[in-house]
Amino acid sequence: MGVDFVTTCTPTFTKGWDAGLADVQTADLFTDMPTEASRTCRAAANEAVQPGETVFVRLCGAEVSVVRGRTPVGVIRNPPSSLTDRLRAEGGGIATGTITKTYQRSGDFDVRVN
Image 1 (spheres, rainbow, N blue to C red):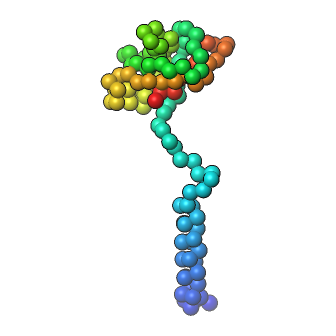
Image 2: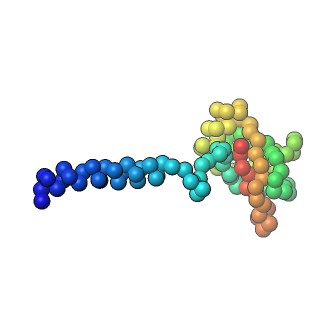
Image 3: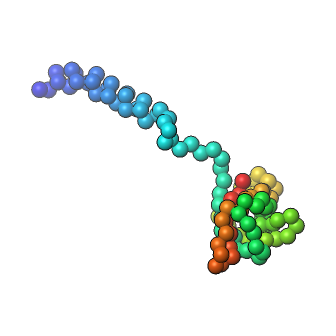
């Protein structure tokens, strides 16, 4: 059991690894593929909002303002740098968003930035 064993078993090992690699790379029913890049942030509410509403998200200095029409309805304090960088680079400081969830006790809401 030495070099002869290794040389006879090497093709079998290689076939097994190749089959495993093909299984991992093949998509199936449970493969999760991202369809769109979005980010959800918590905003402090100034006015009542409903889930599903479309709003504008605007960069205002160090904060991000959430606006419905011309009325500010909330503010995202301390937004993540990825959100502020994206707003500066892609939309000139403004983007659309969707209200995803509201919180009854605090009045805050989650907004998904598209």
